[in-house]
Length: 196
Image (cartoon, rainbow, N blue to C red; front, side, top):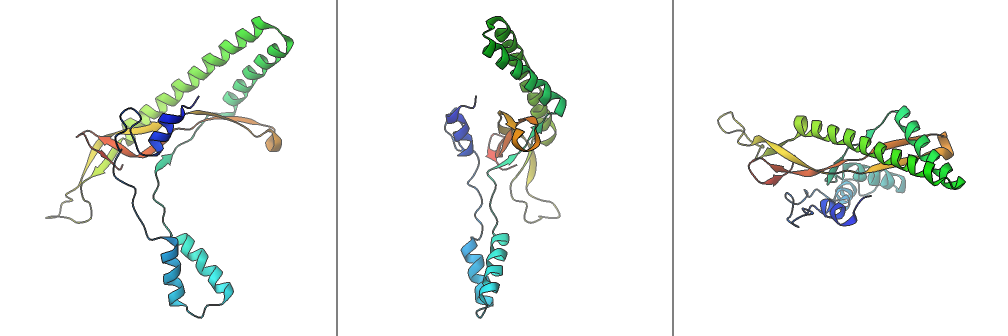
């Protein structure tokens, strides 16, 4: 179960434990209206059809700063089918009033969830080891041939939850995904939160 308060805190760029702000504010880019005004000024006699095209161009040119990077761990079809069969056996036992069988399958479901969680944790630890790096300082110019900014090891800030998706209406299949989202902020080894 996803707990609302820590989940919301992370996506508001606050540490769920302390309330401290994580990193700096998201970047601010030229807004859609500013792009559209610039395009319309360049073509003051544009037709209605052309104005629609200019709106599309402005929409494409409008950059949105990302609050997080989404990562989806999709388990293989065999894992999804196994998980579905465990849940279906528990449902059938419950409908039949067989409390012993229902308890058995509920235990299997709980253990299976633990295994999925462990697999997700291993994937996140691998991601931390190989992608847990952030840029700090200014990287826009070189001073005597060297960038004054540096790259530091960083602790990724992550939320993660299990998501079971039934697509039975269209594909007659079920899939299980683990949805960790890495916030675009991290805690650096030198102590400061920054953007990875």
